[in-house]
Length: 315
Length: 284
Image (cartoon, rainbow over all chains, first blue to last red; front, top):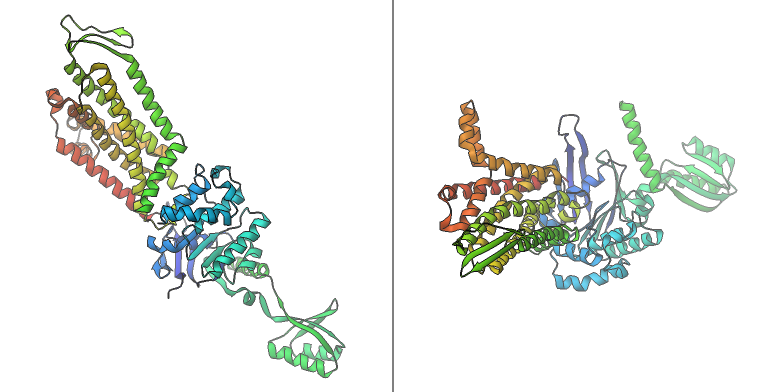
């Protein structure tokens, strides 16, 4: 079965209308999101996140490469029958009520009016807007509009959700509710592509992420893999012999005593195990040995700064 | 089809919510009211014995006028006025349909649904035309009823003027959509379409203009423009002739109906096709 979202070699070059330099918003992007997966798309401003989402929705045509939703080309309107989209900075008609908004976009997605009549009250209840069902959208706060946007993305019960900053302007309680709602949707097998600047939100919600940099995927994978350093460890032990520490340093590792524990780096897992063997043999008692993880923010900033350094060195 | 119908319905809802519909019908009502109060006829045995317009008595003569002829003449002349009024009001009420759709934050919501870009654009066009048609039915229908009430003369041909006016609106709205797709500006769409209306009317004298220009190429361009653009002056003539029927003056009755309607329809189809093509290729 085809993946809900697939992009291969996506390139998008913007050419200024009256001369000037062309800008490559995307430069060979590959992406695949599986059913039931919450996938985060990260990157600094101008990295190509919104362009990727717009190409997936057929709002923008790629210069080259392919984008498919459930195997259908993104340019085919039918591919969007199973897609719910929450754009950033969306503007629902202010003269419509919440109920009318969901009815309009439900029918635009091909849902029967009778079905919508039954579905809309439950959906409004789910996003905590039931009491506001018949109030015009222009009276809504930013957070309420965002929750209505989420309901509009869900009104036709899509199999894929493309969400651009879904918790933007939402209070902490509302954020948690949206997070829970999205996780419930993913648990039902829906694929979710999340585009957000809030790395803590992404870290909590997503299984996998891709970090975009200058239109390319700079890093992609499971969050625990990206944040695991692989070479840094924290050791808590007593009776550690200075000679063992010196020998470890001679073997290419580093070990420092810091606030009652040791920070150490190793070449690989065998190198750590060899140290453990020597410590145990010297009579040390080990209480804890754990890999040190970076935060997603550390990884993100590291990747983005790396790009800035590259550009500076080229210049 | 469901999405298309929802989009058409949205045009009406938007017009109502933004006061466009109310202003559109209020202006028409105001005009109808003024007309109903302004015209006072005194009819005796099928002849007009006296008439007052805005309270001032009109010269009728001793023998009186045949009311049938009077109504026919009045209605055919008045349909020409309604041609301007109906067209201008309709364009004013519908020129925003594309620019507003293309606004950032709005277009994403519509295009992320399983509706093609061309059907989406055409649904707005159909919605705009239905809005204009509803107003024409109201405006022309009410005028006709007032004439029947004041004169007791039934002259249904007057109602046919609505068809020609709607045809003109359809051609001009197609052009407004084309400009709207390219510029995303309601103001520019309106200005360009009104300019086309007057330019098209001026080209009715294309033979005289072509004879007056200095080069053969210029003359050909003038003739080419005449055949390419909507013939707004001839459509006005067609409205009057359609209402007057066999009583239309000879100088008005002579025009190439097939050429006028055919070339204007071709312009509308071409403008709408170009607008659809550009809209379907646009990056948002």
